[in-house]
Figure (cartoon, rainbow over the protein chains, first blue to last red):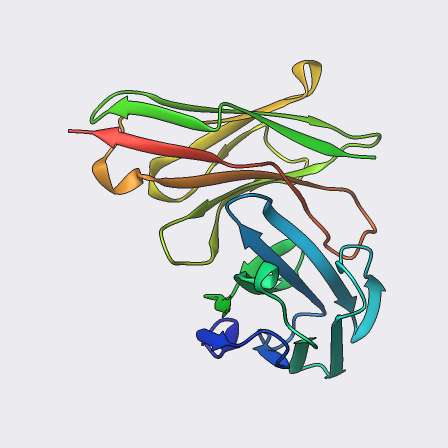
Length: 111
Length: 114
């Protein structure tokens, strides 16, 4: 099994640009989670899906952030427009039997 | 609402010494509990989990944790630290019927001195 796949691994963009992060969960997992990790705020849950349906998006910081899961094998997290304070590592995780499996993360730098 | 508290944001031990990372939780129902490890520039990796079976849980890399309901604790231990154990460790709690959502503690960074 390839595990959770995230792309890109690194993203550098200018303030105001749109950023799209991608995630392919482990096949057969029915829950998918997006997290953000920074030194200041630690690990934060942004949103999670169950069977492709968003269940809890209370962690999404503001309307600039949106997430979709059009099918069981793909999810995106979009930031539009991006700001320097969005710089962080973004993790996707998929879950089965309450065990979450994390991807390698996308390191986003907004200048 | 459930929560997790990890005591000590940074723990330093000598190689070969006992590792003890503390985790306390609050939950209204019997929880599932987890320890994850994060090595630099990597995602989190599951070390071990408690799901209401045996209270002493063994995980990978020689780690184990004991669920103590009376103390609402789930401390992580390893008898003898190795240099490769240096990483950040996260305790997490999940309640049932929450779609696998986990509440993570703030993490404890473990340093191992030679």
